[in-house]
Length: 267
Image 1 (tube, rainbow, N blue to C red):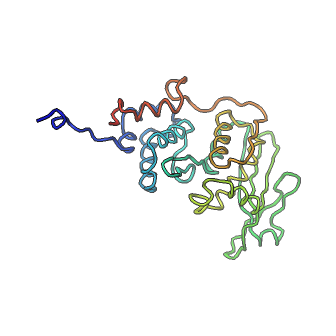
Image 2: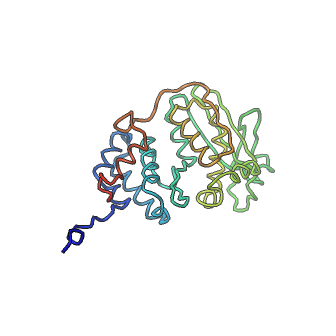
Image 3: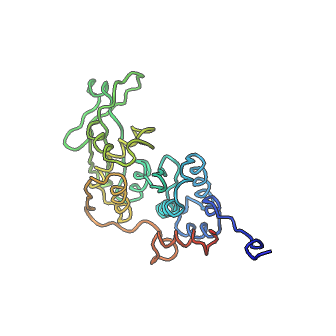
């Protein structure tokens, strides 16, 4: 009998296998904030894979790059703060409005952030007033018939007492959606209101003293999701916010390659 027949064929490890490996746990443990344990992060990641079967068609490299970026930011791929969107064989990370707000609130200068959509009846009744860069009034209608959404806005209050808001019409939001790779699937289809809030918040973000890491992620999100939008520069530098993954000289790509390489048990 030949050596080939006697050889033990190793089964390729799945994404689930890698997620539950000691190697992955060790990589994210040093990066995750105190409120998010490795067990919880891994559990949420496994649940995300189960909820979106198409992610199984994505490359392990693209999936783990998203997982590692999320662990550095201390966010979960829970479908609320962040979404994993499959584009063929590539997994793309999309941070939700609520995720971006959570990151921005970690900055000590921000007191409050709020975003919402405005309905026709609210505007017609005078229950929404936007004046000189501020939301002066918004009384939410609780009636079942509120008409169509006509605008989305985001506002921020700083601990200094100043405030700033950005309002976008539905037409402006739809213009952004039309240039997005994810415009015809994912949260743009299932959660339009939330994506409209996020779009308004992105425009507002140029007024926020965000950390370099958050600013970098928003710009990276621009490249992946809104290729035609221009980048904005932070008004002033902020202190670093995210922890590094083990070797601070290693890029996310280097860590991913190490995790899923044949030498790491992938073959």
